[in-house]
Length: 359
Image (tube, rainbow, N blue to C red; front, side, top):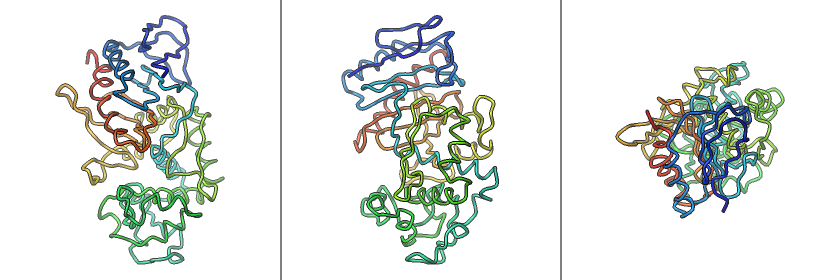
């Protein structure tokens, strides 16, 4: 295992340690990021280094910390490197939400409250009932569409694992029956975001993938990325758009900046802010926004509320409410029970306390 390799260029004054936790000063931009000279608790992060060596934390590939819009910590493990792209699984869903926000501002979609029936002839599919006509784009974004699908229940007819073997994911989804009135209950439903991607692909000039490249990725300076695709060769909004960890950090900072990246407006501020706030409560009691989760870390009797994207394996983009912080964790503990809990543990015990030194 290659541990905690620091890849910052040796320009200016750089404090390096053997384990690699360091702050950088007077360095050039790194993939579009200015670097931070802010102090943090290096000794605590060396303790985390040891926990990595002991395999207390497994399958972690990177930790990126952005403080006040500057790159403070950049670490790679298990052979990962700066320019490697990473599959974040369901973190990729939130990119569909960002594209929708941009499409709203540019008039390609009228409203989040537009019904799905304005984009798709729902009567052409199985199990049609009037409740389907009341499903809106907002319901898809907040996982409250009411379709008979819940990914956390393996017996659910609409579980995503039943979708992937089919030759048309959109048709499969729209053929599902309804379980409840739209808006009456939260259920994590990947297939609904595939339908959202289908709508965007049809409504946006050039299709979803070309529009996202021009309107989202290019202004963020993200050129090293790959989409996965559906059987119809549409960009897969179920998850899996692969970026570098520093690219994921740009996406998080876009929301932290209220839709701006380094002075350039990319997304409407109102949409960015609304995305991060709680709109629904999940089955486990978490808050949920527009494909962003909500939780609060408690560290040393202090509370840190955050919005975050989350994907299988322990992948996270954290945007802190009251701190100038964006933190990215990429991990490949796919399907492992410890995937998410170990990241929470790492954040509470090491990353947040180390970064908050002096606050």
